[in-house]
Image 1: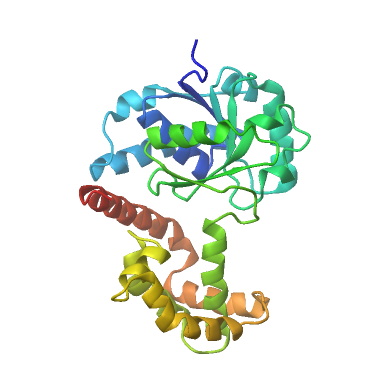
Image 2 (image 1 turned 180 degrees about the vertical axis):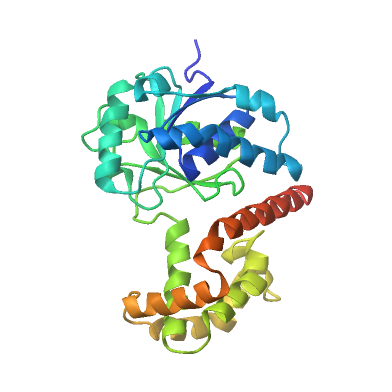
Length: 315
């Protein structure tokens, strides 16, 4: 008997953009997917959304066998029917502690003892909403980036009571479905991705507030500058390659500058309502709110082409 039976059936709880993206990943990987959302309207649209995403991936050469993958997906009318027989459950309900706590309690009461539950929480640690859940040791954070079926990184963050054996198992599982899992050794609010993104956002808002540049020019600095390198290497490798002698050489040259910059931000200002409105006005002048869905679809297509190119380069 296997110590860890293979994962063949996945239950999806929450079928919005993130849950549907997870469904794409699992179904294209040959797994049976059972979906539930408490909102009947979202359930009714789930297959349409998933099918559209799969066909967009197929158009750029990132997926095939679409019809067969879709045949492995079942939309369920109850939470129990979606997860009772699942080997793995991906929870993607609304990002609020009370909502996630209620979902964890319901999921923990229905899953098999050997099942694993990953939460798509983008910054709330699992200990904040699984403490009183049945089988709480089977829960951990499995946080993707939006859209999950295109951007592969996934953050794995155990709660203090998570069974330690689950982390390597989930890491192996995520790799098997084409994701790029990263592991945090312990909980921290915001995890890796949003703490890194938050540091950049805080500086971007501060530069905008102080009038050093427009929001558009700050965006261009990232998209046409930093982001071009960051799409295939991280900050440590970036600086390792940016000085003749490597990382320590870079640090000896530029650490004083970065220390001075850091000291110039001794207090976290936050994003005032006026500042948010100013940034929002710049964005709405460039992109009316009604055009947001079209621009999101454009973003996803560009990401798909980029991912295909990076795969072709062995990255």
